[in-house]
Image (cartoon, rainbow, N blue to C red; front, side, top):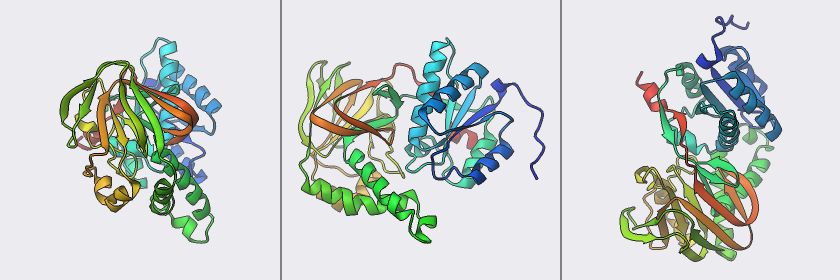
Length: 348
């Protein structure tokens, strides 16, 4: 029997929860569970970009102070982008944002300290209130989206292989009911992504600085004292990945950007991976931990860069496919977004 809810509070004192209706974990049972603990009218279900825009408008007009997105990093990216722009168009300050881990990789769940189990998700939701702690998160504008990370190369290819494997695994008897997203990655990366990277022509890219001087880093993430000015080339040649991020994680705790914790607030991390894929495969554990070092890893702190490809190339934005392009611009968004500080919530 559904529990009787407390009298409705003003929306500024309440939490809006937006669930991605396309996420595998967002089942009818889960929606009903959320409906038990979320205030009346505060639960939104989005299954398309059009619905997301409509929900964003409704959230801004209603004046919610906290918005939680339930899905993966892509759901967070879509909702933060649409809500932030809707708020700015209305002359309002955007709400604080949080993430409920209901997607696959969820790099943001690791970065923000959000619960990664079903029990942890509902515990996070129960702890939130209007004076909840928050911190600023810098995002990168890529293809009109605000995202913590994006790139081209093995991340986009690995994402494709992951979806290919997951579509097969989820239809297998018994296994499909118990296999996790991590299992699909564990299969797809060594079985498909690494071998294909070893055999196919490498990614060709020219990366040009378009903003403030970019700072080169050594193998241990220390500034070298070398700066690349606006208009100059940061990198040109072959690699297996070219990536940008403001957070350390890529997904499942993979610290692909180990120097993100120490970056200046007005810069993001730019990493070019030119090492041989088989060498990385042989050092996968250290790569996962963020302790892998190689002369063919090129790291910078940058503000605004353009990736130029000789032919249409697949990119990924926030863990979702970003289509094919010959040019990708990554600019640090000028205004940080406020995100729920789950670690401060744990101390309450």
